[in-house]
Image 1 (cartoon, rainbow, N blue to C red):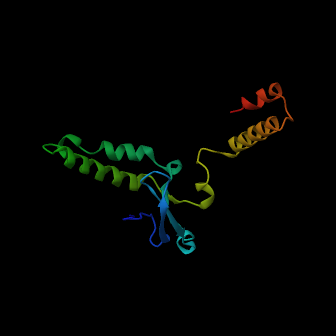
Image 2: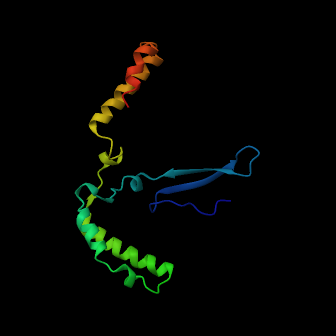
Image 3: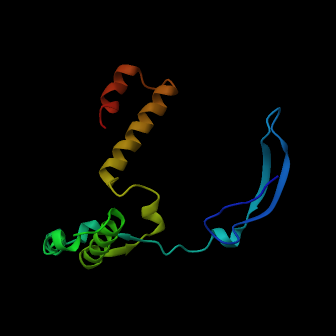
Length: 146
């Protein structure tokens, strides 16, 4: 019996039904619909923009704190909370945030245009080799690009 369905958005899943067991297993298949309205909700996810961060100021802010006195006679949990508080304050002052766009979420931030071109060239060469258009020796130089 299904007890609970967890999602990261409210009203994302609907019409949940159990569809019987999987062979001899005690597991059961679950059928559900993903509701369109919940999927199309625009995400306002903000991420830290490390390219514009002022790490010198960040280092200075954390270096000014007298850690011996701040953490004196504290347990591990209290010390962690104090450190985390100071770290997040310094982060807020020194590292700006940027809103994630849907284009930048599809690929990692380190994947620049030059690297994308090389990956595309490599995929085309491999596709040609699989189709018999390029022999393995002609392909070796292309595979060493990355």
